[in-house]
Length: 249
Length: 353
Image 1 (tube, rainbow over the protein chains, first blue to last red):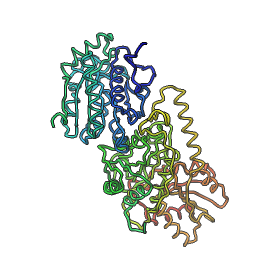
Image 2 (spheres, chains in turn brown, red):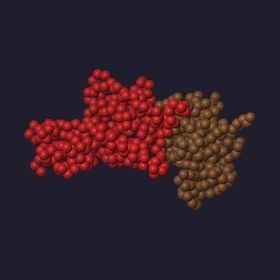
Image 3 (cartoon, rainbow over the protein chains, first blue to last red):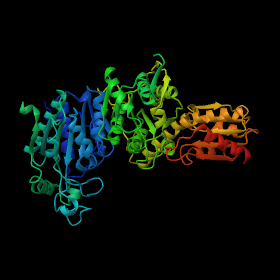
């Protein structure tokens, strides 16, 4: 008699995703979904999808979902959590959505210590609109709106969101992870699960930045994308725990 | 509750609580700041939540989230702040999440003034944000009426799953009047569509969505919204008639201005001039048919729209009158609140014109 050694989490629907080959959104979706299911919290979860490549996240996460306007997911999540404090609320946002147009919303949610989980998927570029420069685009990185590479004299410097949010007293847990190899994927899962546990215990804001890939708009192959991330993003966006109020106690 | 002397903004806030509202997300702006101030004290007393947002944009998106979670929720602001909220107002219309927004209008454009104005009429009734949608817009002319309409606004918002706007102005918000906050019988509506956490069996998975990526999907949504608006246009029109039975001259005005027009009409009637007032209480849906019927009556000679804006209300009056009679405009600009004498003089001028 055969025994199943792996089954897909019930926290993801069977809808095929629209993500490009080599994009890491699928990995992060699965880590979040598995974490919620393993904690037994699927029935009380409300997710908030962003505007960007993950705009269809509400089709993939098998829980109650809301779709927010561009950048406003932390405000929408605040409205849900404050009016339904027994729910488990998370936002799933890209770097353009969160770090550019949604900068006020995420900083204020962090300062308020909003008891939610926020997942930033940082691939250093705008994906859905076709590869424009993001606040996280690296110096010298070519995009459709920085055709000669990002020039700090014109465009300033890439934003380190995790470090910025860790400065807020209201931020409870801030960690940057990556999904470039098995070891880091397992570490990302651990961080995501911890963020949900903290929220469940009444703490917030819990923020996980996941370094991700965009082979389509970086102009590299799916396999090259992981290497591109390691060589270009990891040196600037250092992995690790930026803040953990529980660990400090 | 007994009759009390209350400031408009505070009375509206208390009326919201009586109507079952327990959640408020807002941002300070003159001349409506007494609404958030009052609710920051009162909502925690009744087990609710007041939260001061970082901006009007965030506030309306918090309202969107809470409305999607199925609770009675509101925000309030004044003209420039309402401009900032349009992103969320359009989203609320699309996602069909019930919410109430109070706009205590002040003078614009730009930062403008902090005094009363009616210059947001177009914004309130013709759209405001992007897309084919409407809000149900109530225009109270007294603090008592504002309180009564708050209860109606929350109820109709839940019933139709629309955004209801209570459109006042700085004068209504800042003045004091005797008012009774009446007990409200709060109807229960099915909110199984709300995101409250899903057990997988008791109802379908709830998705509050504003994305309709294919032409067919968006076409279907827009058709459904328009069908709903048709029902609202048929069933929700509210207006007041004042001395219209024998009127030869019909003034159309709403809100604060309509009050002042009533004084002018009493003075003119004492002088033997047969003038009456038609006061729309819902600005959308606008009372098109009742006004058209009045225009069709032989004794009615002329209409006059009187407004604290540069010819916004008059456009709907002309649509309703539909060429049957001349429609004149008396416009007060730049937060200039008219006295009854200003309006009476204008009406006397119509008679000799």
